Length: 163
Image (tube, rainbow, N blue to C red; front, side, top):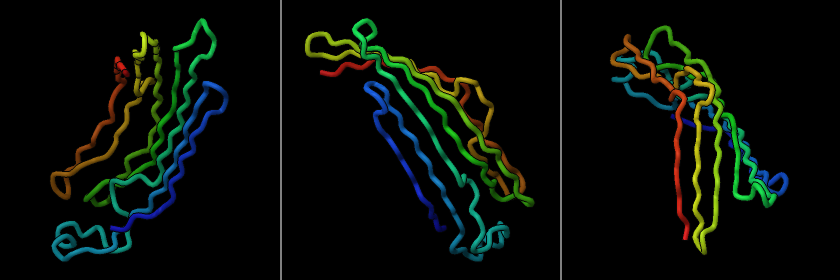
């Protein structure tokens, strides 16, 4: 297998307290070598064809804002989006394409100093819109495929102590 393509990450503070990160990756994955057993079993993937299970495009954009005013100091809000393009499935003739998807995530956090110790609480909501999507597909045989479902809306809380 041969992978190639650019990756780009840009991160920075736009204004005091406002940070953002944007990522993009293009992956061209092709079969560079095969063996007779695989060709006899699968027969679908000659050298030079696109490999299955790898989206060509993935991207994300996330931003957070940490309040600077005295009244709201310690509060942080953020959100972002994850994007993934379609991908081929394995081992079926004809091949199927798993559609691309986008998910939205949010976070809210609060931090306070207690002496020299920083205490933070954070709540994340992943897949806020409860998007129904597939992240990939597996196979039991060349003719039986099963999809891998993406995570439904998910809440996660955390508390951290830094000393």
